[in-house]
Length: 328
Ligand code: TXA
Ligand code: MG
Image (cartoon, rainbow, N blue to C red; front, side):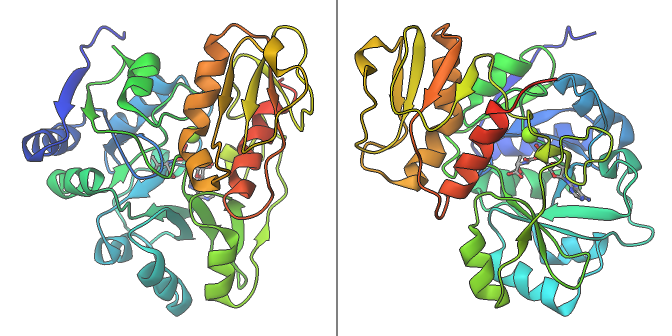
């Protein structure tokens, strides 16, 4: 079933034009965005969208984020309240996904929306992503370009580790600089609700809205996820994680932040400092890479030193807590 050749496309105008044409033709193309690499398919083409789930090995149909090139195209797909429009004008293009009522008759496949009457829309800022979406002339459904349950890819090489031979092409851009997925904000109710912390901080949104959006409780109920990405074990590496580690035990790998040195660090199989200068943005940009590298060390446990709670720290800790949660 997965005997296709995965073509490597350049992140140049010719590569983007080719990626757009492939998407338009129903193919699966992974491409860089400013958050993480996405696995794109024409969102109006259910077969193409089904290919996403197949390639990722997802065991359930979760709604996918629909990527468009600007507010005009987004407005064809969803009903924007005045507040939603203001938010979009302020934060787009960029790492904020808005969940809105979908527009009656919009051509998005149900599979992409997983049967929901709402739609999650995002306008990426990455120039390569933008060029590809424009070249495709269609809305692009794109989850992160990893096998289901694996860490999200921030490099084309990560995509190939998970999906080589399972997708049609990868656009070989560089590293995704935000490094964690987009923030998902639901505007379905009167008060905005944060479904997933991410690249735009809660503080940024709060200062715009004039109030702090509530973060929904993480659901561990596989049957009723509002945002299935919030399932606690979604981002798990093979090793288990031990959070708030102040010391390192025999055979563990260590994930560090800033200048804090856990006791017994010399025992670690491998250690990775997310940002020795304590910069949360730099930490976010290398988080998934770091987890992958530490996982490859063969350690059965990754000990994670304390990480601050503020700013992008919230998104980092959210990812780590989910990776640390017991797996079913
Ligand atoms: O940064 C990102 O958002 C990346 C890049 C590729 O754009 N994409 C991404 O997609 O993270 P994915 O599929 O890995 O995560 C999408 C999340 C899921 O948790 C899904 O349940 C939620 O968005 N979602 C999608 N549509 C939704 C909807 N209508 N209501 C609530 N949650 C929704
Ligand atoms: Mg994902």
